[in-house]
Length: 468
View 1 (cartoon, rainbow, N blue to C red):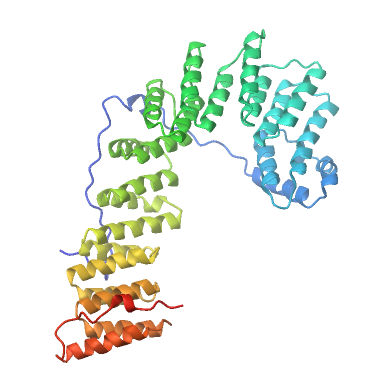
View 2 (view 1 turned 180 degrees about the horizontal axis):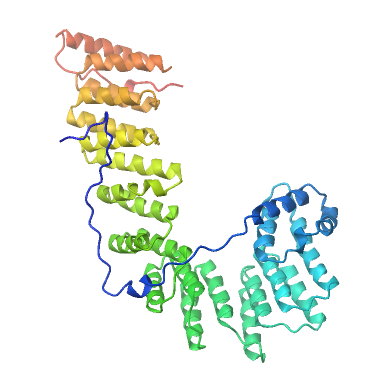
């Protein structure tokens, strides 16, 4: 039975084949994917906003005084509070970079006033300075720490390596690594190797990613989730999907639980390569193990399916609609499914998918989708069904001038004088002014309808004038 545009109320999903993963590929992973969500501080973002507003509303010269007066707010030492605050200040058009510098400087001075000798606190300040690319204060904090005769440990060195690396001073970062190798009780740790790997990941340098990954293992460290995350993200950034895949397989074989960032990068890599089998097996497994749907993953998958016109796979993605919160993404999925059916000439599927889309509150994203549908009707010479379609959407979508142009041209070629005249009247109703060329062609077709002429070559599409 044909699926219809009007009154369609059921969901139709075509059968889809799920490719099976290679034997043993996921069995190590299966038992460890039930990872509880990271706890979040419900008040963290609001507290950041409070302090951010006070700092933005203050003069540059008053920043440190404002911080002194905030009491409980500024007692917080965690990076999860200060980093978003500093990044917000840095990106705010209403603040100067000097305010970020003053906040960091105030935090360092506070450590000095309190005679704080905890290397972890100094490491936090160095890391914070690095995260906002203020290498000057990162180095200053390290120097002040030494002046206080506080012996830096591996955590402090790691923070300074990070700060140098993300300020594009790679040689200095590597020099610090060599210092650590020569320093008793301060040898490089797994975090040290991960920090350097993360630097090369950011740069998309596949050679050095491999080099430091091997060095890490030679040093006796077992790569962890962070190691593989940096490797995989870096290889994707470098378009080295072969190396990404090898790292992904190594991670699974080592029994390391991937983060969502890692999975997103892996799926991005598979999608860019168009590896449908790997896309399906990875995504299917994620769904079976209860992972939250990531919209970036869904969008990447869908773009691959749409490019290859794999409509059955596109329909499967649409079946996840209820788990998606992004209405724009849902609308995009509906539109591409409709367009795919239209381009393949499957008129019944076009009508059903349009009805489903409108019933779910999605709208047409651009004239090209509507024009693909209209062209499909004309290829089938389904003029009455086209009329139903145009009537169905007239209250929810305003046709573009190019769409009216298409209707006029195709109706003229088909000799549909009455429908052509109706389109011209509709143009007038919505505020488009038909050109004199259109009027002349209507007169020509009227003569043809009366049998005075035998063909439609007088209809000149190129003579149609676009509105100014």
